[in-house]
Length: 177
Length: 271
Image (cartoon, rainbow over all chains, first blue to last red; front, top):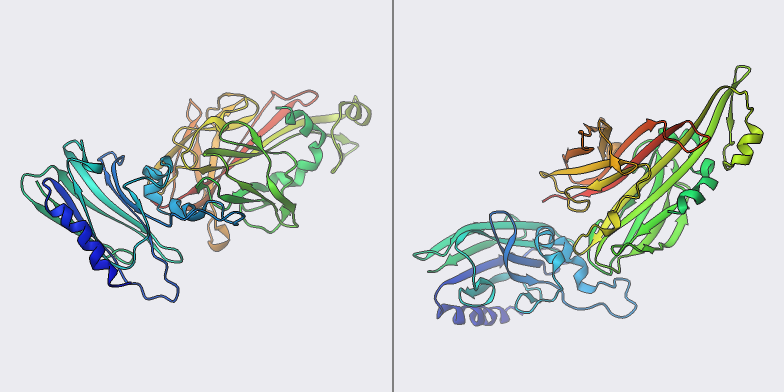
């Protein structure tokens, strides 16, 4: 399992490195020493100053649908509302899964994501003040929200760092012109 | 609407006089959910909201309004000693209104120094019975209508307001900022209506759950403005019991005074 992470990392970083006007972010899911560990649900999005959602970047959750006759007919989507802020700001209005945003839950470690300004969630993002929000909720565990304010676009590359207390490790945001 | 008339028949059962001092509540297991999820609701009557130590609520007059405005039935309804309970699967996206509406008329009068009441506990009010049992010349006759509405709200996915439309009868609450969008640190505003019109200058009380585990009740006291609006600043996350009562003379005959009460349970989340 552990060996798969660097490959996944490379796959995200390499295409990002050749594009201009990028948001590169790194999110660390800490290794948590508990008897029963479940990978957290994670949502990342860009928030406008009025707290509305400018762009959803990623939602990692258990996409699996419920089996017929399951006591939990909502399947893995049952726990999406536990990402309370994301659910309120946009999740409850989406038909999950959403192409390009939803993905499977990730193992502990550093995860890199890269977004180009000319396509995907950053395409047509107006200039302004934004916050990167990373929210995580873990089964039988805690919940945490980390935010990173930044301006878009930038004239020169800027790096912002934030850190969670328990459920999130380092969150690093590189904003490139 | 027809359940208002049906409920007249179960009047005295649903609102025994002794229960008036008690709080009746609906306590949903969660209020912010996804489509297809199940929610379970406890319905109890006791001195303190959400403390199961007295009696089950009578839920014969339960109406669940789905996000599209249709009525849906609860499942697994059961009545225990201390609470009634039922389940609901949220098959539609949007906001559900879960309401118990009771409408009762009772008479009391002075019979040679003794207070007489009719109908007796467990019996039902009828116009014929009233004419027969209550003396036409009863001394200090008081005939009171009690119109009570107990509600809670749950939402699957994106909230909507179809189920929240007021009926125009008695004391009701309508949302201004939302019924399942409640967070500590954000003021929530609601409006009270009496017979569909703004209910001004009404005392409103909000109490957070967990009174059993603290010394002070910690009520939040408010009063509606001229538009019937009031605003709550939630102090902590959890369930809240929000209630108000007004008395007026707009009673259904033969009652001469009307007591309209409203109580709702809201879930407040931490942001």
